[in-house]
Image (cartoon, rainbow, N blue to C red; front, side, top):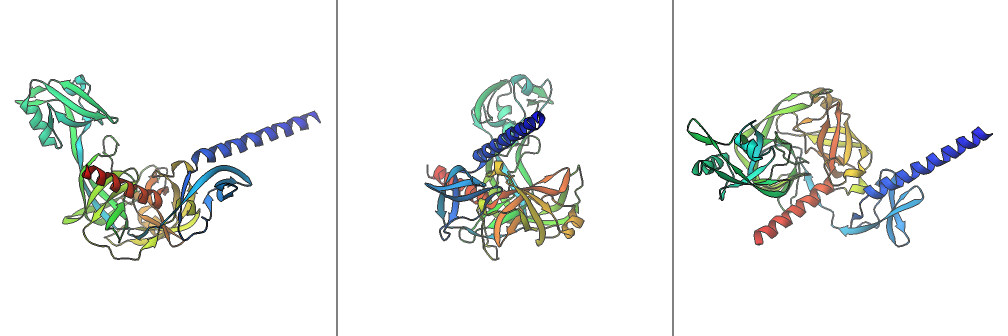
Length: 386
């Protein structure tokens, strides 16, 4: 009898602890502000086990019958966008020069220069290209005062170059641009703007987002696919079409690149889904694994990630279409930005592949992308006006 009582007591305590953990998790993760269409009476559904219902004083989240957090609903005009799925080339100039690596025992190492630093000036001269950096060092080969950005802080370092074959060098490998292929997610027919990729364009050496100075997108053609397999990501093999500038990029963010297209994209505009409307279950993606014309492939949304509602990993998805599995093994590099459609709405875009299972990957919410597109446009406009 005593053993039974102890067992029941422990089970009860474990249940209380689990419930407390669950409530704490949802309380920390669920967003306070929720968008809803001005034509909706109340947003249906919710985030996984948490659902939206009326509270006595407004709106809130429930887990079962337990109210755990209040929320504020905001009526907005639901954006209608044209889903794309077409490959595009990216060409970006960085705002400053990215230090890709530093040679051992070099002047750069000696003065404290590190991988990932972004050099903006040398001896008071602004530099944005590798050639400008070399010229600035050559103007003062005895000593260089380097102004740089590190972790959003401005630093100044003094470096004494060494002469190699009559040329002053500091011993750092640097990069002033980035290029690659991604997938266009959507086009806004009202504004002429686009969103793509679903995550930031990052430097190949540092893994950090490239600070954007200027950028353009071009046409791209996919000619082959390296299939993904467990432990190795696959890749779309494509070329950037020459003399095919299609638009400019004004923002490189954690949830995608955004810009303006020179020509309209034909297609039917569909409404975007707000985060709370995304459901676990069947959906489709538009992806291109050959040429320039996207195809529709079936997927499942397996999980809505409450801890990354505003980042590039808001959903976990799984490719279920045998055609795409046969052609690519699942999600591959270059497929980032492929739009996801569910219940007739644009719900998000593919962003990452899981290396240990290429049939699965992450996706960003469409609402996160459109919010960032508007935010960056507003900030850029303010900066220009100033």
